Image (tube, rainbow, N blue to C red):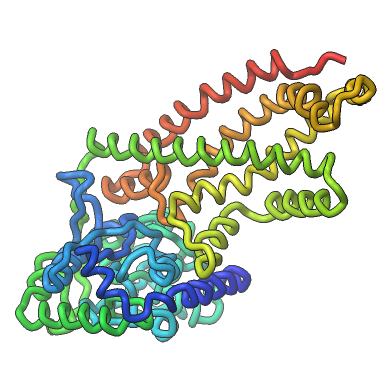
Length: 487
């Protein structure tokens, strides 16, 4: 865990450097565009920001209304930008959007990373346990047990502050309560807005205690005082004229200026949701299209890069051979997820790529290492005598490689390449961590919206199968027809 946290701080520090060039320009850029871009995560579900069950593809939620109100008072139009919740701060710092407005909790640690407006909503942290756990009345009663919460949240800080508890981290808001119901964790600590809608509605669970209190505020990049002041003034005006209070009341919430804010209802609030519809299916098809495009482009680049690496390792000088070998070992020996983080966030100060480009390049760099090994195996399968004969006939080494060795090596490598393309289709699901909404991310968003993982999961699996099955058949056919080289 310390390694992961260290990487996160390294990423944040890099993005702070990258954001230095934005100082004083945030408001001007937004006014030039006519758009205030705000980051959030649809997977957080109701009541924050989610797809309208009656109009899939359209957004609803109290933070959608707050964003619209703030933007309107600035003479701008609000535009939502999808981003994983736990990576909202690094994405803000690298300039993916203007503000964070998505249940961003004000904590001392976050104050060191971003600038906050006044709070727009307060909340309690609620500990929930199974109903039969009658002896649990506080977090200390769960010492030595597993407690679920959201990664990167204030609730996680509270759980970690109790000695002996093992935190179990989640990315979604419904999964912790599902695990609690089935006994996989002993308790769940989350904001009461989440607990009321996803925990208290489950008869097998009960509220054990209120274990903390916090506030949500809008996050702005440090060094942009004009944008911070403008957004804060807009939020203050919404509070003074009652618009903020009306928005929160409309969603059954309190606010900083509302008495008794944060008191949870014991019976919970059922989440508005609808069935899986044709509109959801269209979103899945769009996600599948993104998956195919990213995978195809990445594979094309990986094939070219792998070929160059394999040629360099086999025919280059000592320096080139060493560099190519180091590349292969580094990219095969480190997780592709880590590589995506470094490419998208860590290199932002010197190379600011958009999410789509970073996804394609990141996957291509990783798979080039694997394709180079397939090419190398293919070249080693070509009898050495053919190369010697070609050289004896007066052909140059380059011509021999191009006309004799590579055509046969590629034939040997083709079945493996087809199998790698199938693997790449599935690995493309990792790019959701850098804000790309591909097929798997769309599935997780829809699962929260419709309150079921079965139908979205089956549709997602069917689409992956539809994409990979033809490639699997092709790979098997190639293995039968091209699996050997005549000697």
